[in-house]
Image (cartoon, one colour):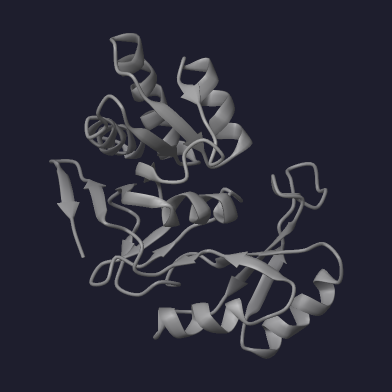
Amino acid sequence: MNVDDCKRAAAHYAASLVESGMVVGLGTGSTAAFMIERLGERVAEGLDILAIPTSEESAALARAAGIKITTFAEHSVVDITIDGADEVERKTLHLIKGLGAALLREKIVAQASRRFVVIVDATKPVNQLGERVPVPVEVVPFGYEATAARLEAMGAKIIRPRRKLTGELLTTDNGNRILDCTFGPIEDVQALAARLDGIVGVVEHGLFPNMATDVLVATEREVEQWAP
């Protein structure tokens, strides 16, 4: 299987965990898109669910697939959320998320969930977070240069403020900016997360420690199910 085949395998496995009557958190990104597509097929077959998407992109995919959308005003607890990740630390199942710029809503939905299932292909597990990808940090637009200076002072190398393909600064669904911060391999994920939480101007960051209840890793041979 190629990478897309592995993503689809993990996504379909995760979609099979959803049962009628559930409120389902819909992740964002290429692997989550395969999951939303499969849930749409199951809805057409009679599956009765409500969904809370983590981005406008995922909401559009859900509507196109015939999946009914709800909000936290109607349902404050999510039964299961299924989402991808950019890195998964093998021993701890800590995550880096946010290369799709939806990290704030993804974390809100994940934290409200009874079960948080992460679906990845075999390229995403690492020994230490930060080996391959930066930590996305969502910041308010006002004074983001000053916030970037604070991040650099604590050791971050800021690759760039995230931009669109057109060259314009990217704006998240929440109206904020993304600073992609490289720290190298992260020795203490929870300590770094706490330091990022303490910076004024930081809305949220892409470190998701101790949040995944299951990680589904699709290899060329099978879908492996990991638990903390």
